[in-house]
Amino acid sequence: MQIIDGKATAAQIKAEIKNEVEGILAAGGRAPHLAAVLVGHDGGSETYVKNKVLACEACGFRSTLLRFEDTITEAELLDVVAGLNADEAIDGFIVQLPLPAHIDEQKVTEAILPEKDVDGFHPVNVGRMSIGLPAFVSATPLGILTLLRRYNIETSGKKVAILGRSNIVGKPMASLMMQKQGGDSTVTVLHSHSANLAEECRRADIIIAAIGRPAFVTADMVKPGAVVIDVGTTRVPDATRPKGFRLQGDVDFDAVAPLCSAITPVPGGVGPMTICMLMLNTLQAYKQRA
Ligand code: GUN
Image (cartoon, rainbow, N blue to C red; front, side):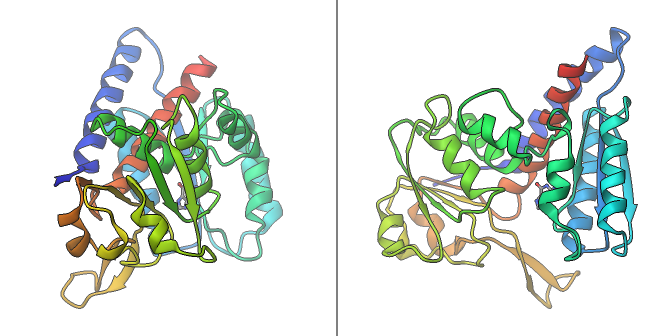
């Protein structure tokens, strides 16, 4: 059984990006610049955004963090987005989700210029990606495909079971894995209303779990020799940890890992790759503007 080390792979890719940025700077160019908008004080969002800013530093990017209280109105946030769209100094930006309930996330996402939408959430990018055109691809699915490739895991013609149908992970993951230029796989998408979910998982050569239910994938759902990718990062209370919680994936790792040919851990698997792909998307946005 092989542990797929997302942390190490992400560090390697960030070093490659840094190297490229140093070349740009040495040639007299400017650094790529990512902006992040954070509304409110959600613990998970604070951590993600902090890690995105740190990743920018590691890659030699400029970053700008714009923070707002959760009392910001939708109109005010849309003004912030319009300002970033128009700002020549910003190559790409993200609005960290979730947003407070009084703000329409879809409206905010659609207000972002597709050329600066490095999250790949705008319908133009989602649509272009789904028909195989150049686009910003949502970072988590892109990170998973990159991990599979860097670990030389065969995907062509393989049966892939994706658990979860979210717009951010499940749906774009299914799109990427079925495409000839992507995974070239046979894809099944499973969700809360799927019949025979365990049986469908057992048929899969590759399981990608993104349902946000801690330890949902158990040993009886996994074919011996399968590859298991765990996207889950639920905070579960744990008094033995300094912060009072630990991150639990969607997979019962201890029971499932011995069965697998390869598996991602939580933390240190998909998470670091997601942030790293955001950096790659930002570099791409920069190059498209240069
Ligand atoms: N919330 C959870 N994941 C993400 C992400 O990849 N991008 C943004 N903007 N918000 C998120």
